Amino acid sequence: MQVERIVNDSTPLTGRFITANELRLRWKVSLTAIYDGKAGTNKLRRVRLGKSLRFPIEDVLKFEEDLLKKASKLKKPFDDYED
Image (cartoon, rainbow, N blue to C red; front, top):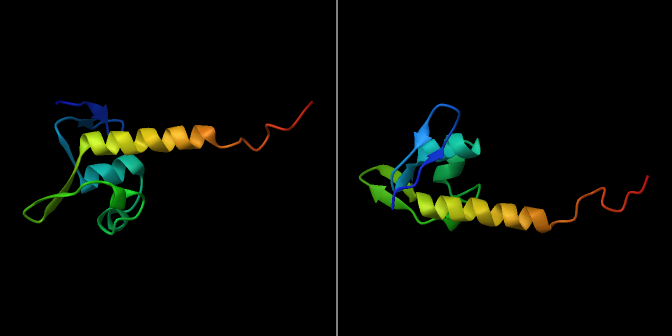
């Protein structure tokens, strides 16, 4: 399955896996956070290719989608505010 997404404004994301550095750019977190399993990467499957770490793109997209669904269910701070 080929998936195409944008990592940042200039880097198209294609293929089956995303590198740790691409994920760092996409989520705007440190590379250490990616490698240490912080920022949600502990919930993603990891694929080691030699010393390189990769994540299946479908896992990343599913994780992001779940976060958005969860965030949209949270009550907004001004829901009770009336003019």
